[in-house]
Image (cartoon, rainbow, N blue to C red; front, side, top):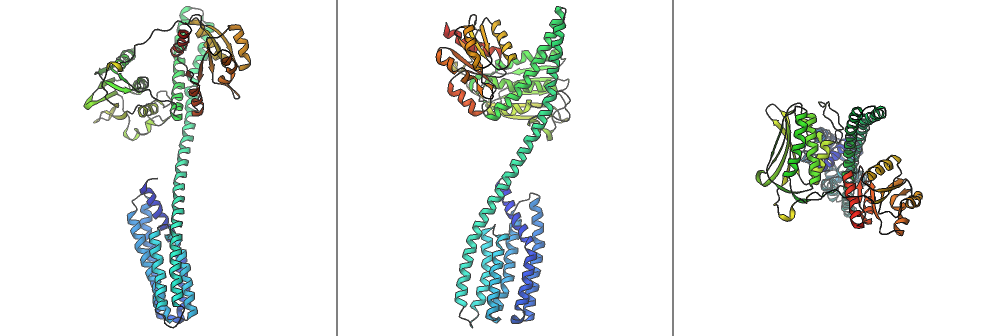
Length: 566
């Protein structure tokens, strides 16, 4: 809660309590009128009673307006001034009775009035104690009027003792007022924090509901297509049918992997396990590569394509930057209508600006904040998608310390969307050059033990590794490891899933084998986002591959063990 909101809460609470206490204060005025009527005189007591009641009623009317303004989020200073002025005037009016009337009262009546004002002052803590300085002043005026009345009464020897007691009472209540203010302030802070937590939980629950509904639809489509295509392949009778089915199956699998990758990206960013590897790199080659790929896509779809690029170096994670640009370009192709798409790299004012723009209907200004929310899709969007692309873009931009901007391509017609990613420019050097790509390693004869509890994963991984020339043995739990090693021989590498079952993990399952064969390599494959588990894997110092695993990345990692074996 910011300071202004906190101030509004404090003053709003005090005003509400003051308004609620007005009826009880009116009863107190009537009691005092009845008690002092005989001793002070009808006219004096009546005048005081009318003044006190009128002040209370007027005060309630005065504080009603600031209370409404505070509820509308208006600043608090005006309400604070009204509270201070009305409270001090009220205390002065109330204190005028004992100040003027105590010398005329019988001692017993004077003591009763004194006790009544002490109770009245203590009750004022509920409405004014939250503003300690105001409460101290209010209480001082009220008890000061009582003390003045006793000081004017020369007929009793109790005056000095009562005045000393009033002073002590004022000090004690003032101290309690400060404690009361702290406790109320803590309560307001806790309430605000709870309200924020409830808001966050509600948003999370709504996001979860949207995710389940969207994911159940979007994931069902490629899964359904994969099932149908599997049947087509099983019944295919010609090479052409097989080729068409394989191409369609590849497209469906690519869509499925993109959805899972987007969800995994969000999970890793939420858990803090996705950290950028910032390096000084040229980004013109990245733009050139995207130019070739997306130019072909635009030409195939009958869209215009434009790419402009200058030479620039930045300090960034090139892989994450590429994912940002691909998300933006895919969005432009999907939601940009049938017009053109443009990718531009420029260097204005010592900065590097990457722009992706389209000539579609544009994103309305009122939706520009929400389009970066997870699972949010504009009401005007009819194409498929889970609404994760721009959310991932925003989070990755923060990781890369890049500024994200959005505007209309044509601000007059309010059409087209231009998304700009701004990064600080860096100076290139020979040491900062990007390393050239290396040739794929030869894995023929590499003995690999695969440990995973999913039969489908074992079969697919075995097929891939055998295609690369590896010698493979598979097992589904720690109890099967010894038999698999007996069939395979001493493994060069063990490739294991981390979570095998609720009670077993890959590291524990391979513990005995790693102790017997310390020269054996070990690669962990996991989709875990738990920071504790990620830290444990990091402490082990083993290579970790994220699910879904990129085949080229897997081959490169296995190639390291082949090189060490050679």
